[in-house]
Image (cartoon, rainbow, N blue to C red; front, side, top):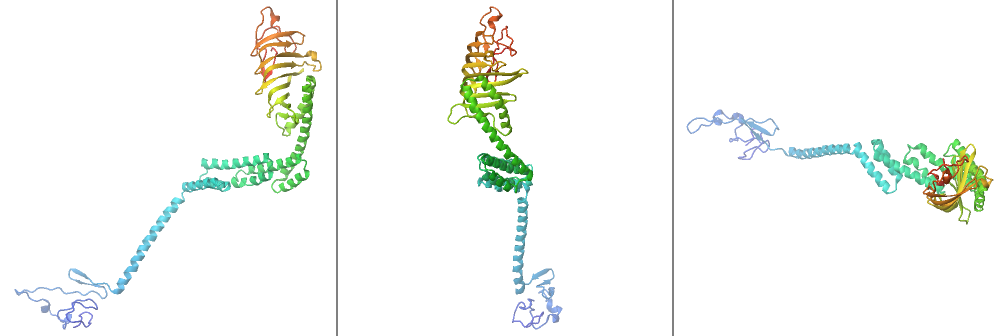
Length: 461
């Protein structure tokens, strides 16, 4: 028999066509068109007829056919089955790629947030610092400040790196390691280029100190060679300033030599108790000292002859000056037995000159003391005042022997600088000194001693 739809020869009793899938009629030799209503509507046992559904064949290649009120699926062809697999795989891959893109975008957005970038750079900077990579660490901190300009932590750490490096450079200069100092100073702009002026100043200081050191060692050729190489980094005006500095350095060493010579003479005069000669020499010494300080000399000036335990220290306070000879520490403070000479500007009539020899503790006079005051005419020793007694922290304490300009000697008792009343028998019993204008005091005062720079005064004001 044949299929009523496609006409293919079918096997006997085949339920459906294996070519197009259509159901096979029970009478294979009769075509669908030849079936009568009688044949399609057999009678029931009671003689009533039953209406059978008339199949409606599906359009060609649709894979399904419809009867009244129902749909019957037709199995896919082999070709259609092969197409469904790749399409499903492609859909899964596409969905996965979309998720990856969305995730990557979200991560990139989080990664690129300013706060997160700054935190990563701060951690990177700390890692570089731990490895002593200061240039790289400074670069990270600058990058942080580009993101968050007002971040104090980054500002402070960048400044700390820069300032510590400047300190290291200056320490090398002080140690005379000028080449090493120059190499490190050239790194400063890589640490903080914003400090351009100060970075350049470091170079100028190094070249100036280096040239001065060469000049002090009497190496003029070395100075010229250094300035020739410095011209690549410094301006012409800066080179001129360094040359002037070299001239000043040469003068500095010349004045220093003169001060040392004068110091040796002053030490000898003090040892011989030539008080008037010491004060006369102090006048010229003070002028040289002022020039020494202007040229960069240190204060106080201290000199100790080689192999001697006796040293000299000199101070100047505006027009007043002080000279100490004896046991003096490295800072210029007397510690032990020493003699102090003072020349104080006292008025239009001249200077107030005095000295005293005593023991010193922590820079203050203590112990037995001989105080010597010169009159207006330093060459006339009869115009002097001499006091002998004990000092406690710069103040007279106990009984003193005082020889005054009128030739009279008084024995006056002090208690930590205050005069004790010895007698009430008239005003002359308590005469303790003279005013600075040489007028004798006939009245009593309990403040006969005042303290200034550790100097014991005996004058009544």
